[in-house]
Length: 381
Image 1 (cartoon, helix red, strand yellow):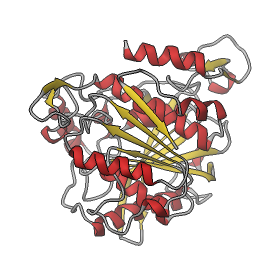
Image 2 (cartoon, rainbow, N blue to C red; image 1 turned 90 degrees about the horizontal axis):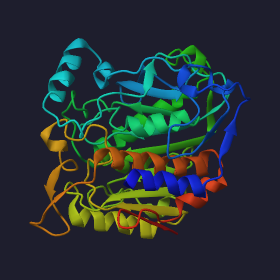
Image 3 (cartoon, one colour; image 1 turned 60 degrees about the horizontal axis):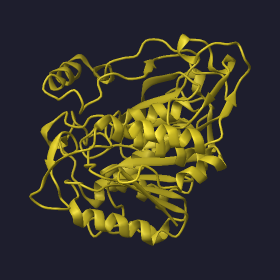
């Protein structure tokens, strides 16, 4: 019901966008997106099929080799895949499959809407780019629903596994020193993707990324990473900050006052990971923003409601199924449906990046309007 209301609202509010020339075909049939006549909205997948590939990039300044997933508009739709196909080797694949056996179906998204190794679409010739930073001990595909939504509308996404800070490769600390390392990972990924003939990048994507249209997104520790990147790397033009403040006493040296770029802050009202104090600081980050800013608050959402791997391990379970409110300690409740929460995240993320990377004024206007009364609250400044 919530999702249908979201679609109805955006169908009325957003001006339809038409792509390509008419051949009467549907995008899902496997035909090239540029040959398909489409009207589309940002609350659903766009006109492009989505491809993804795993590449390896060196963060030379830190001596770190990073697995990086790239999602991009593809030439045609082919087979989707299991999230186990993101595994770096057979042992990791077996571990993912074993974890999925114990996770409630509604928590972790099992199947992608993208095709591994699919040929990139030839148009648009130049792609805006979002670099995504994952949460503490998560994965580069923690938010692949968001990545797929963006890629289906012509925005490429690159997400590194932050070495020593993933679900399968842990050991790093939640501190200022490693935050700097994570931020350097993000900058290193951008450095490599902007090399016109980089041998690390698939040939069909070499030289395709638009240096003037680059943004960053992050969840939890990744949100803090995104804030530091916005502060320190002027190439990034906008930032999506999900479920954590980036300025806080925990990470001195990162300040909202140092960021003039547009930002979208997403708040889980029942965030049992950062708690009521963390949400108070997150809201204060929004209030302190010196550039254009939006804040999305989702009722009954938990810290992992935004993630595609909610509940995959016990530590990621606050955000799926039954829980205890942090706004009313001791009160039992049921978190928002994970499919709906991920759709809200992807829709508002898409609106935000459409406004700031695709220069879509209708998306900018829709982004600032509160919809789904009692579920989603939007503020802007």
